[in-house]
Length: 190
Image 1 (cartoon, rainbow, N blue to C red):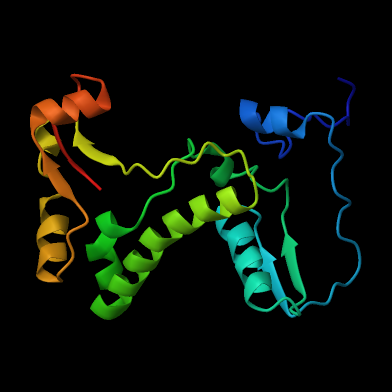
Image 2 (image 1 turned 90 degrees about the vertical axis):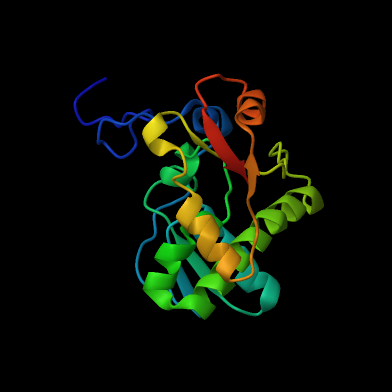
């Protein structure tokens, strides 16, 4: 590579290469032109990760007349959203942190909305024929060391106090079976 040439495997120039799925998805694609000059919009979203893209889609769905502009420094999905391993989770496990940040009522609203959002993403993929291999099968919160066993207890207790029961405690044998690994010693399932 000659001095000054861009390396497409390191788009940000920070030493990080694109992940394989993004390289394959972008193969043969041309970059969108850079924004030049002024742009006017009703709403500007900065960041083309899952949250930014989903927000833009939902805004247009809610009010198609809105002029929505999404600005992304790299390529949509090129940042942390593109490196997340394909997981979409609710915020039930974070209920106590949410309560500290915004109070109980808002924490519950956000956790419920996040759980509904998981299902919404699956419905969106199905409706639009997106081959995302979406499966709404829950997730395991597990311990792989004795010190981690019960890390979920405070969250579960608080959720029960609030009348919510998104988690099911599993027997250790069931955790091992579902995780397909004896490294998982205990866990709960959402």
